[in-house]
Length: 325
Image (cartoon, rainbow, N blue to C red; front, side, top):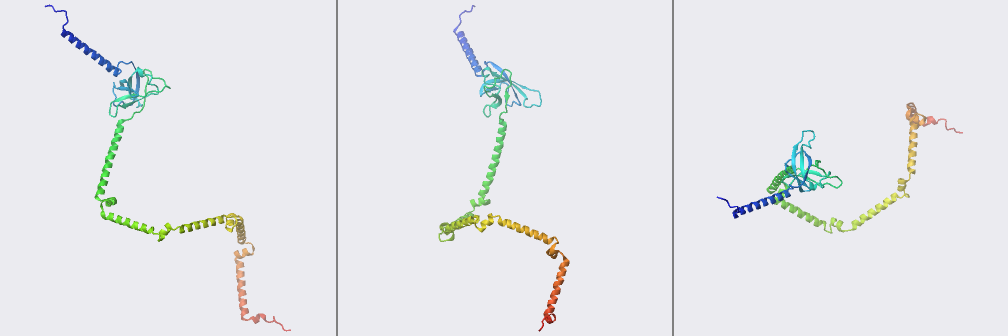
């Protein structure tokens, strides 16, 4: 049986559906590629990292927070002393942002949001440096470690929990009446005593304010104040008089004549003391010569005996001294 060469409506309808599906698929692929910059021309940059925690091949490369490429490859480097270069990242970056990435640009790992995926973010450079070319290296800076931040936050939460427990113990003790504050809160007798003390203090203050009392007079009567002002004025006048160069006190304080005279007297006394102690002269002999002292002592003793004898028998010494003519 010979098949008819004409196309049936069913066949045409199936072909139209397939054509529309292919068209929609092509548009979707184009839009997705445009959104992910799959069809953009790219060039490669290199970045060295100590670790790439959270980032993977195919991860996003951002320039100033905007999607500009992907992480093409992550490679381990040979082990050496430089621990800042454990991994080498090959970045496929859109050529359209070449002018933004310059030699003073800085790259770092950051998180999309607080708990999102890791991306490699590059800051735009400045016009004073040249753009990075294909195969150049991006300088990497230390990024904020969210794990360390979370660890610190965990420590802070632990401290807050401990503080809450301590506050609970303190408030529990206050409610139970423990300690002075607890007694103030729960003990009625202590409250009454404090109230009585305050009452007596108010009574005392009222007595202080009594104008007939000594304290009240000190507070209200200006007489004492005026007398104190007078005393201070007199003291000031006395100080002025003492500072005057005309009075005796002022001369004693300012004139050096008395000082020089006293220095001269001191020097003369010092010279006299040296003369008395050098062993020369009568006075020095009297002070230092034991023999002269003994002779003078014997002379005084003999004179004392003679005077005593004269008092007993004065005629013995006056006989023949009186003559009658």
